[in-house]
Image (tube, rainbow, N blue to C red; front, side, top):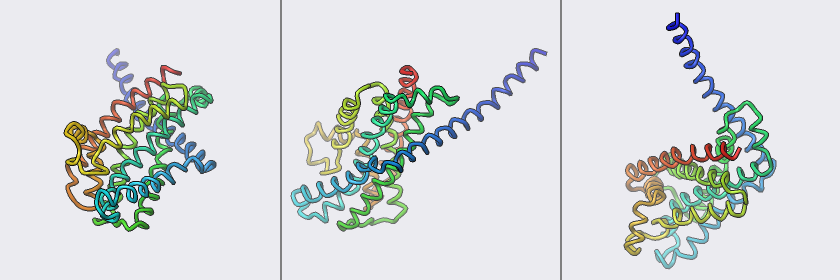
Length: 273
């Protein structure tokens, strides 16, 4: 009789797990919709995604193009994949944690806590809702690059893959900013810490100049920097060249960041709650 009861209890638990996962996904998507509604009602939230790609591309091409490559058009071909990766990193890293920090301070997350939803749902929903920023930033960058004369030398699917790869890395690194937004109370400090954290990752790469022109210690950092792998993969996807190895490394780094910092952010949120 006891064996029957144990088997029955085990079966109930097994059936409950898929239902919990389904609720977690559904609730996360609902809160992602809330984030999109906020953006639709306040388009100013997308200003960084609209103007950052334009400013970065114009700045790098016309400030360094002549000195580095002797031709702005040649440098545009070199710099565009790197700017794509850097833009999508910054769009995620500099906004997601700040948005969560604001919601926590205003008591919005206290309301979520009173609802019958998983503790991770508010964080996951907020991060998923910010994916629209990646899409807008990538679209603006490709449009600006096209107007300046950049052309994808492979095919449209490869261009989409380059943007998706950069988004995957930006999304996973964004969880570091989520953790910062939960742990730190002041908005200004959240922005400062996030920028200082992303600065060596975004700029310590071969994005702007070839790595062999750098001193040895900096080359060593560029070689292990996960953003360098994303830049190499994007370069191969957009202008031709090796893709498999750098793309694989980018995906592995993205998975690693996600596995480490997503649970840490959820744990910190639970502790703060």
